[in-house]
Amino acid sequence: MKIKTAGTRLLFGVLLFLFFNARADLEFHPGEVWRDVNGQPIQAHGGGILVHSNVYYWYGEDRTPGGRGGVACYSSTNLYDWKREGVMLSRADLPRYYDSPTFVERPKVIFNPRTKKFVMWMHAEQAGYHYACAGIATSDTPTGPFVFLKTIRPITNDFEFPADDPNGQKQFGATFRDMNLFVDDNGGAYVFYAAEDNWTMYVVQLNDEFTGTKTPAIENKTWARILLRAHREAPAPFKASGRYYLITSACTGWAPNAADCAVAKNVLGPYQSLGNPCIGTNANKTFGTQSTFVLPAPGRKGKFIFMADEWRPQDLADSRYIWLPLISKSDGAFTLPWRDRWDLSMFKMKE
Image 1 (cartoon, rainbow, N blue to C red):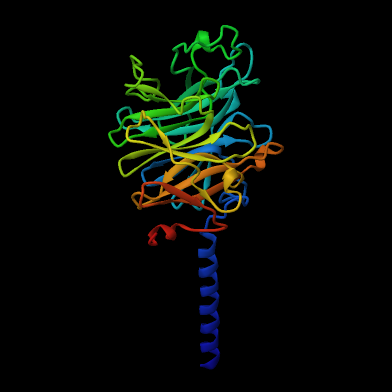
Image 2 (cartoon, one colour):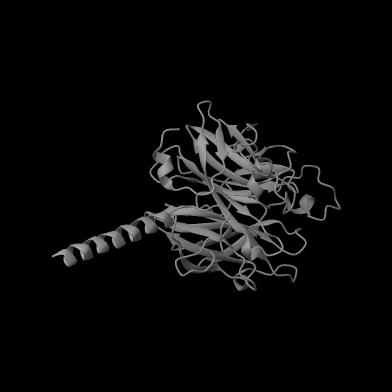
């Protein structure tokens, strides 16, 4: 009997050990290598997340050596464990213009309930960064295959661009670079992007299919110039308590800089800067990162997860992911304190 009791206790102890260590794995470790369920580093840089049928789909740049220009997708039911679903767009899927290949940056996907299509927008680019167009693709399922439709510059107005502009803005309209998608409570969709050679941000309403802009394009009614001449990029919009927020980065290439969080009463603005939300060591460099997406926390209205990339330009495949909780303040602003490790249970805590 004593042997049986000791064995039972040993088994119970082993089960407790396994349980607590398994739970310890369900944490976010900002800046560490994040591996998928097969043990491979996740390749979803500059990405964003679509929530569909209680599944999270993480789309981003596949920077696997030799695969530049592709879009990868991962799925999860808990935000910690991610399964690679494959390449949604390969370099071969992208068009060639002016006899040059095209690559993708910052892909985002939203679902259109009217057409039942999954719609991907991206910054479509070529060597030299003068092509600067929006790329659009669609799929019948969240895991592809996505079919590339077209590239466009959403707003073609000429804001006294010089005739010799290397980006061709006078002929084709303002440049389209760092971008994000946002779906409002009423189902309307918008694209935010760094325009006018990154000097001014645009926000543009999409058409009913989400595959282009709403026409006719009327300034301050269907689209607007925001953060005028502020030289911002990496837009990450979200909505809280009926107000629209936009986290952005300054334009300093691969080098990190101070984030800014702006707020507006209308999705088209005007937006007022609330300053840098980051708190802690290296806050003036956004903890060495650049914003890419803000995700509503699961099941917690008004709570959000800030997603950013720690870019490593000498080895882009090894760029890391920094996910941190955005903390709301009583005055309507948000703070972004650093955490070495954390989990979703913090959203159940009192602020």
